[in-house]
Length: 111
Length: 122
Image 1 (cartoon, each protein chain N blue to C red):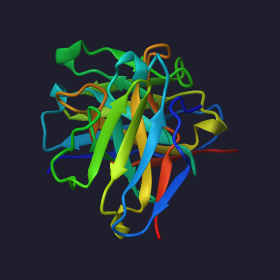
Image 2 (image 1 turned 90 degrees about the vertical axis):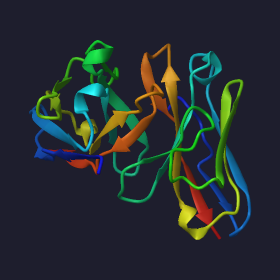
Image 3 (image 1 turned 45 degrees about the vertical axis):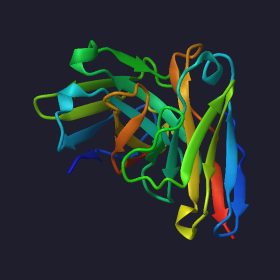
């Protein structure tokens, strides 16, 4: 059902850098629509982490960064910390569906 | 403090109806577009629909999976958004969240409620 594809899981040791992708198509990311990223801990609501491809809301640590190119976007976490262990979702708009769409979600595990 | 609080979830039989509420506080509710999302147990996030703020036309849009069954409304004087769910199906079982659309960045949702669980089962 998800229109945007993410790797199911990534892992890294504390202090390492992890990066993962969000792959879309010409009707969403490739059409120029912004990509936003959310962080979600178990049994809690999503939290806006990155908006408009690479901007951080107030209070979000600068170890989180986003980028976008072509039909894909990426989220990077540098200096991985135990508290970053969560699910991460990308989100954009799809013009063919006339709908907001989410990625499949990536679970980040801190080893 | 800016916050959203959902209520109205519960257990309902297939084919029945349920109305969820989302109360906002700490901001001018009518200035913002509001959306509803859902997350089935163990699954990812799904957009359900939105009601644009009055200044943006006050229009509604819905996901294909709920169009014709779900209706979003709002009462800005009470800072409340509603999600009326009719003809419920078992696949509508999920945690339902309301969220505020970012004031400047279209399609980014900066404030979320804690969610309310809807279980559709006989």
